[in-house]
Structures are given as C-alpha cells and as structure tokens.
Length: 395
Ligand SMILES: *Cc1c(COP(=O)(O)O)cnc(C)c1O
Image (tube, rainbow, N blue to C red; front, side, top):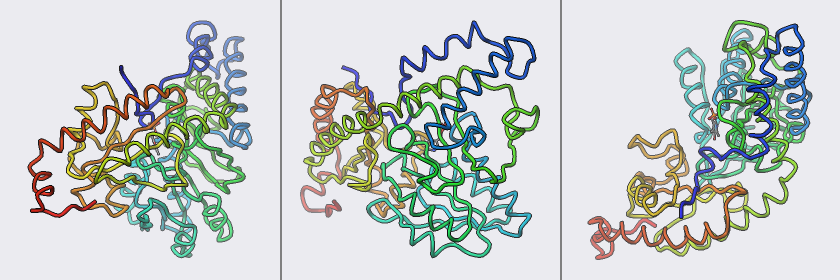
C-alpha cells in the first residue's frame, strides 16, 4: 500500500481540473492579447476564470491578479507595500515568526535595505492574537502580513480580528492564505484583508499558478516588466490552461467545502488520537483552530529524516514539516518559534490529508507509524539513556 500524506506540500490534481485544462493546450491555444478570433476566445476564457475565482473569494474580478504561484504573490504583496511605504516614509513591517519562507525571506531582504520588521512571537499552542498585532502597530507601519493557516503545524490564525485591527488603524493587511484556500472558508470581505495570496497546487489544481488578490485602491508594483497583462501589474503571456485549472479546482473545492471539511476532519482526529497514544509524543499546533487536514507530532528520541525514510520504505509518504527546509539539517523555524528545544524539533512528523484520503489509508498509517517509531527508538543510544534514567525525558 502506498499512502500519500503530504498534501500540504502539494496535491494530486482533480479530474475536473485536468479536464477543464485540456482544450487550452490543443484547441484554444491563442494568446489572449491577440486580436483574431482564437485570441479573443482565449481572452473570454481568461475573463471567465477571473470571475469564477473572484466569486469564490467574495472579491471583484478586477481585484484578481494571476501569478506563477503562492511565492510570487507573497513577494509582490510585500514588495508593493515596501515601494509605497518608502514614498511615504513608512518602512516598518509586522509579521509572525512562523510565516512561510516566501514571506520571511522577502522581509529579510528588505531589512538589508533599511526596513524594520517586527516578528510577533508565536505561543506554545502555535498561534498569535489580534492584540499582539495591535500593540506592534506604529506610525510608520506600511504592512501587516500574517498567514491564514500555518503550513507546518496547521494552526488557523484569527485573520478577521487581525484585519479589523489593521483597518481601524488604517494599516494595509496581507495574508498568505495558501494553506487555507480550498480547505476552510476564505472570504476577503469577511476577513478584512487588503491582499491575499493563494496557490492552485495546494487544492488539487496545477502547479505554477496562483493568485494575488488586491483590494481596489491598494497600490501594487510589478515584479516582472513587459506587456500590459494583468492590468500592467504582471507582464508575460498568461498561463491560460493553468489559470483555467486553478479556477476549476477552486470552484470544485468551494462547492464541496463543508462535506470535505467534515470528512477530512474526522480522519484527522482518528489519526491524532492514534498517534497521541505513542509515549513521549506531543501534538503541535492549535488543537481547536486547526486545518482539517493537518496532523503534526514531535516524537522524543527520534530523528525526523530517518523517520521519513523508514516510513517511506513502508509506503507512507509524509514530511517533517516544511518541504522547503527538508534537505537542510536546521530544525524547523516553526517548531523553534513555538518553543521546542532543538532536540525535540528534530523529531517532527507532518501528515497532511486531503479529501482523497481514505479510512483504510489512515488505518494503515496507524499500524505503520507506531511500529517505526518504536524501531527507531530501539536503535538509539540516546533513547536507551532516557529509558535507563541517565538522561531526562523532555516530553
Ligand atoms: C506552498 C506555500 C507557499 C508557496 O506556494 P507556491 O505556489 O509553491 O510558490 C507559500 N505559502 C504557504 C503557506 C505555502 O504552504
């Protein structure tokens, strides 16, 4: 049995999204900027996809900008705020310590250029409060950017409250909603956001296509210069098939949101209950305000990479947390942010489910994971020292 439990890294495309895309590879392959019939046909399809996406998010079509994915949308939102901020003498950003690297690394670069960034500390439960944001806002704050849901530990942040605080203080607010869109309700009006990023491949759409939502009146600068596509804010011939796939996947996810959430949450809770029974383990992230598909544990005395490799050999495909940091030996910045010592942060396991995950697969994972954890602990001298009381247990 091969069980894919890494849907936070990327998802399998839905049949509806694939089918929707196919005609735009070989039938209607015109350039939406061309004046002839096939170009105009492509333009109509593009407009239709934009309207579909806007409707799913509670936005207007002219507030939707197609990008190459979540990373580009995050970069554009932050760099736009930096550009307009510099003109107004406002060079202070507020974010959290556990953002995705697309946000953190963009801000790090700005710090080198003389901007200041406040990184709000994340509580043990893996969340922040609107109060923390309010206290950090200054006269020269040009943007608050906090993710809607964390990609490693699955916490869902109080975005509507944070947005209300920002609005009251007249500070623009961006949210990286890449893990949230298609998985929990996302509505830009209800969430009080000015900018929002999403990515198709996290909700069964194609890779390499995303959206930056920017509320009317919000300043956007472009990352890529060239033609006048996306109202002059993102040059380059549109990835029409990808955009159509994104819209189809988003529509499908939105139409089935309630039923998918109920199904995935039930499987998630079964997995959490089973793994929670493993001694010296801890569930990370907010227990209540949590993505339906996220399970994230630390197991004491285990090295994350060995756990993943051994699980893979049994047919369980998982992650230690961020797909972007695996391959480096540094523990996850997210686990350090919630206060885990390095020793614990190394033994992490993220299992991310989707609506395609079956109960049989969860049962299989529940057989394999405890066995593998036990086997690895049995091989570890550090673990033996703990069992023999030579070293203390931390969990
Ligand atoms: C996956 C992810 C991104 C990056 O999106 P891409 O489309 O892969 O560039 C950004 N933020 C979060 C929270 C993510 O999970």
